[in-house]
Amino acid sequence: MEVPPKEAAVAHYRRQIGASETRVWENVLDWEHLPWLHRHAFTDLEPLSASRSGWRVKVHGGTGGPRLEIELEADRDAGAYVARTIDGPGTGTEIWTHVRAVDETATDIEVAFYVPGVPESARDAVGHGFTQLYARLWDEDEAMMKRRQEVLDAGRLRARPDPGPPFPLGPAAELRRRAPVEIEVDGVPLRIVALGDTLLAHSAVCPHLGGPLEEDLEDGCVRCPWHGYAFDPATGAGRGRHGLTLPFAQRIDIDPTTGEAQLARPRLPSTA
Image (cartoon, rainbow, N blue to C red; front, top):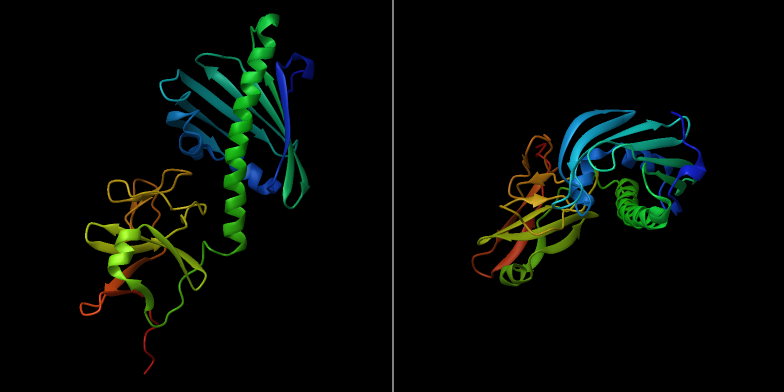
């Protein structure tokens, strides 16, 4: 990859990201999050190709925006990648990003924006628009990467409630009134939701990359805001083509006499 001269760029953007270089490269190659985490900038994405060195997609540039074809080419050995507009408004635009690890929790990035055909009188305005957009995109990406690292460090993608007696949840009527409610059982974050008259408890961590399953139910499903993966909270079954399931769906029992609710935790099979 041949980097254009710095002076040809309409603007530069530099910052330190509070995430490891591993998380940054993982994010760079993750095209799936674009229309979900960055839905203000990308909609109706159609993947064309993807590999360990980049991807190509067709996408609308924001709600009602123009249709674009974008490709990303990465060279991890060189610590750089470029996003190119292949078709649509701004064809020929190249956005180069250099990545440099600071330590295990921080990464420096430097971005240069090359936009063809911009008159000198408009360079500052065009450059400002790009830097403002990228500041927001990186804010969103950084929050996702930091949350993912916290989930990995805590082992929450592997965590299960310990087998044992039911876990008391209090009056069912109060749970229904407050739902959705987030709780933690044996270090595992769960979310209690009301689906009609039924109370359900599901994992609050997406099994894909650890995203937060904290949004309101949509068509009876809980959906991850990072990549749009959806799950049935009653069974844990995934909706769509991703093939993932929630690691467990917990039953909530209600005492018909007292109205008290309890989480029916899994039990180990008897060895007697």
